[in-house]
Image (cartoon, rainbow, N blue to C red):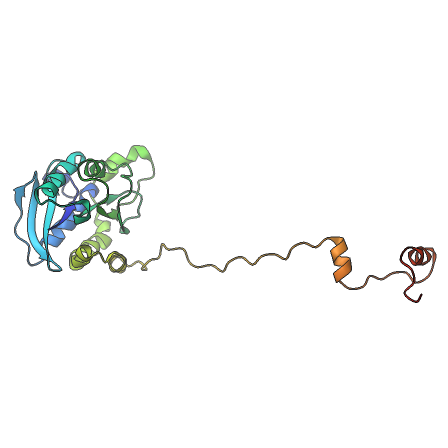
Length: 242
């Protein structure tokens, strides 16, 4: 059994919120052939199906965001699973809208749903983070995450959710790099565009030579051949003719 849990808040008043993009993603997967209708269990709405030859349990915790881990932890213990059998999908303020990132483990980044998952399931589960953008100031975050997606957001949101559902088998198989490329292409971004471009390593500057070294290895200096200075140099270094 493999658990894919989307995070969000239950209730129609929250359905269109940016904070509920995790619910939206698992809804999109559940609409694909092979998944049962939603039913209630483990303090969540659940749907069983199969992906990539693996039994999959889709979950939408109904505990409200801050207690999401209670539901997922209960299912994890019931099926005797470890964190490696869990993938959680949720919203990410620190990614621009439409950007996706996936990783195993890590910090909660201030996300209360993830804090709860960490407490009930351990930290070593996989996390698919879907960018909703940051409003620009801390005091605006609450209204931003609990605000609905704008109509203009559908230009990237719908293709992103469809791409997650279409490629959900990659989530089960752990084909994370390939999935990230698929999701990037779906929203019109360049695959791996965030990876720093290779730059030519800076060429080391030639070591500065002392004036003595320059005199020894460089062109012969123009020394006077007559006059008092020439006579002095002859006495110091001797004449090459002698």
